Length: 88
Image 1 (cartoon, one colour):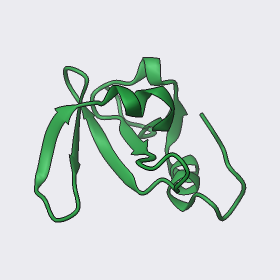
Image 2: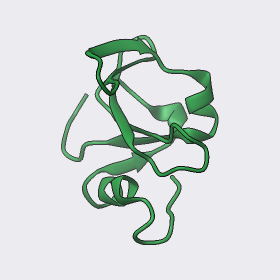
Image 3: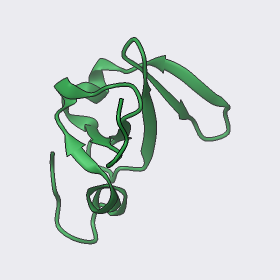
Image 4: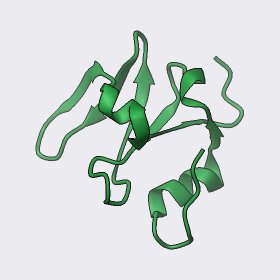
């Protein structure tokens, strides 16, 4: 998992403090995803992995949805974490 200098990625830093990073190839339903929407921007979006390679998340001013995890996110903008102590 990627680590960046302190103070530049608050969501990613918080995830590293409280969750366990894992490889994208190992993600399972229930894992937490952090997504960098804009390539040069900070991570400001998160969701939960659902079965069938889907994500449960919400868009600003929209409802909570479940949709396939986008290939663009998987390529470089997606960080995967599991919750410590949770068995699947």
